Every structure is written in structure tokens, then in C-alpha cells.
Amino acid sequence: MTRSPEKARLLAAIGAEPVVCNAFDADGLAAAVTAFAPELGYAPALPDDATRLPAGRAANARIRRDGTTNLLAATRAAGVSRFIAQSVAWEMSGEGQAAKDFLEQSVPAARGVVQYGQFYGPGTYYPSTLPTLPRIALEEAAARTAHALDLTTGINEFTEESATA
Image (cartoon, rainbow, N blue to C red):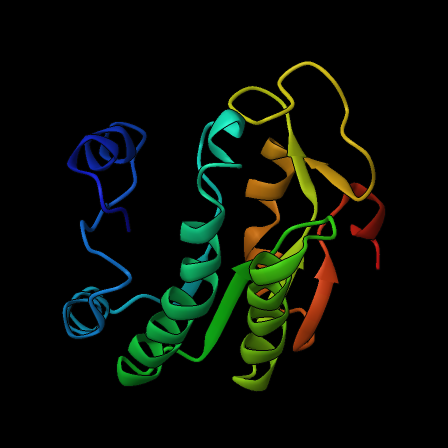
């Protein structure tokens, strides 16, 4: 799911079946999720460009609160039994920390999984350097997404180090 028709074209080009929808439109989101009938819901919440992080703090907090609430409701309405949310691997402050706490409480309360770990590799904030722990190569994170369905409800580090945990 993306809000952007341009991103939908990129997703389709790599073999995904994109859905254009806005997570803040609760009714439209519920209709889109029900029509698509996914096996799981997944909620990342960061901009593609790290330089946009400071300017996007309020929007990021809103997607963690309102977007997560709407996605959880939409997946419940569609009968989706598993939900995975991507959190951040660093401490925040103010509204951002409150929104992170909300996500990390509401998703497990809905029997979902919160995973976190800083991605690195091509197309990430760290294309050629390693971020601090916890971290995971983007390719490894993608390969292990299905594994996350079997994780215990709660918060889990999503790192190479947790691959055998």
C-alpha cells in the first residue's frame, strides 16, 4: 500500500501488487484492505529520504498513532489475523516518543508484532556504512518477513543477531 501513484508503479515494476490508499482515510483504508484480502498487515513509518526526518516528525508521529489505529481496525475488519509494525531502533523525544510508545503498545495489544532494527544496504539511510545496533541488511530483512509471522506477539529486535532467536 502506498499513497503515491508513482510508488505504485515502482512496486508493480518489482512484482508487487500495489494498492493506492491513504492510511488516514479510515473508511477508504478498510475498504481497500478488505478488497485486497491480505494475509498480514505491515506498517512501516519513515520517509525514504533521511534528510526529510526532521521536517517529517509530526507526520511520522501521526502515522504511528492514527495510521496504526486505522490499519489495525482495517485488518480486523478484513479478518487478517497477523499484523507487523516496524518501529524505530532509537530513542525519540516528545510527541515522537509518545507515538512510538503508542505503536509499541497498541500492536502487541492487538496480538501483533513490532519489529525494529536499522536497515542498511542499497536504498536505505545507510547504503555503504553500518548503523549502530540493532541493525539488519535490507535483503535479509525482506527475506525474513515471513518469519515474523511466527514470532511471539510483542516487540522483537529485527537483526542478524536475532536470526537464530
